[in-house]
Length: 256
Image 1 (cartoon, rainbow, N blue to C red):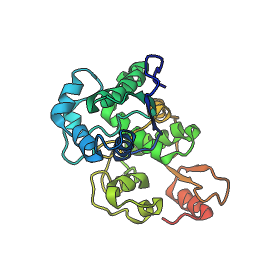
Image 2 (cartoon, rainbow, N blue to C red):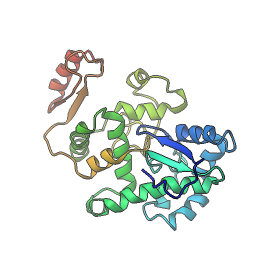
Image 3 (cartoon, one colour):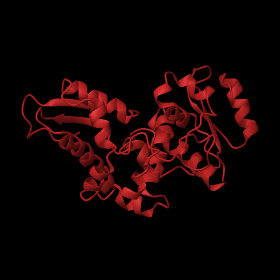
Image 4 (cartoon, one colour):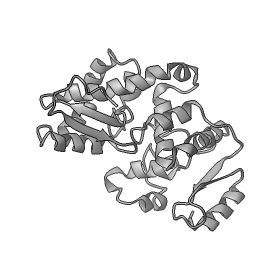
């Protein structure tokens, strides 16, 4: 949590939990400042590549080439680190943005050796961590789920993660069931249609999911299914073959 000792007593408290999209964070900031900044204004700033180029001079984890993609929903998606923040009423949008990026920078520097050791770029790590964050309801499953995705990537399999469909739907996303029933939605985020990682982060991952991607659990598993309806034990079930996966899904009452 950000150090609040130097802040005024009337500081504004911004709480960003894991699994939040940038547009949701923008709406929260707009509400916090009583509409002083509109959500559209905030998102426009987070999509402004010239502004991001300025930020990249101070934040080494921001790669302008990676972020300069017109297909992104929000260019800074993934870097708005989940935490509790204490803001001032007179903070500018730049001030607010930098408070969030400062917190990401703390995490990045704490794990820089692992980032440098990875075969993935920083942006790819955050993209995969965002998928792991969305998929795992418990931190204890994140490293194993990350390992499953690495195994699929290594074998040239598509990730086929339904949570990437959630983000592909974006404004049309209303319920988690929508993600299961729209695997053909045309989007570069959709890992059912496209090989490899989604083109960018699908939310803003937290510390646990990023560390899971940096230090995945090594297994032979290629599939997993979560008991989302709690019909068996409420846990994530891992399997090595598609046949085993289908059997587990049938037990859990999941429709593929």
